[in-house]
Image (cartoon, rainbow, N blue to C red; front, side, top):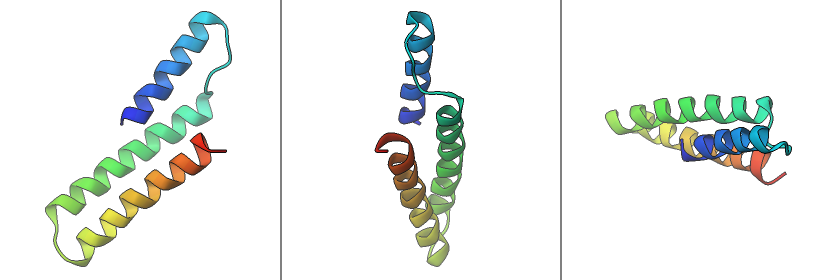
Length: 73
């Protein structure tokens, strides 16, 4: 959620100061991933066993994917 707010803030500042910032694709990636991660985290918190483990893996995997594709490339 924090990364999403940072990217949206960078886009707003970029538009106000006429410098290129993150585009719509990056904002969309962050919003979709943030929603999916929050849902997976809620599932991980409320379930036990394999379902909780799988949801935790989804949280880590999606976060890593977002960082890799949108921040480090």
